[in-house]
Length: 131
Image (cartoon, rainbow, N blue to C red; front, side, top):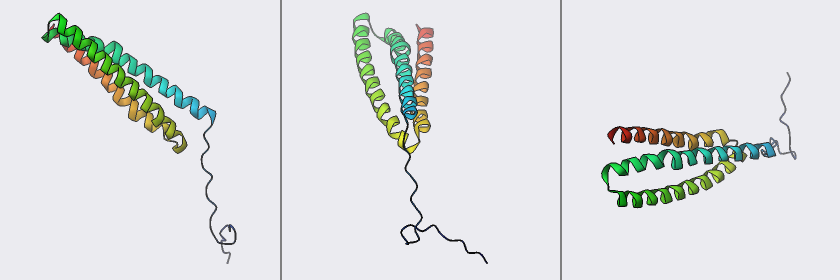
């Protein structure tokens, strides 16, 4: 009868701990590439899609002077929010490298951002149809 023996560490009968994951340069390159795609999609969403959509919506309801003020306010606030979101996503993705969760974390950021783009396109189409 053969008995299986545990690998002994220091004579205590404890299994050795698994080695922690050590990120490589390629992991960081992929992470920062994904941050760059978030930056590009965010820029397109805010300054190409939503900018024109909001301008059309404002033109429906307000006169020219109010439209100009509201437009500048939303561009500044939206640009600031985009800047903060990209900074936060960089930290969020970088911390996901050690846990090997970069793909999951990227999808948590990118999918709502793409949905935001699609929503902006829809608002723009509806506002153009009403104008």
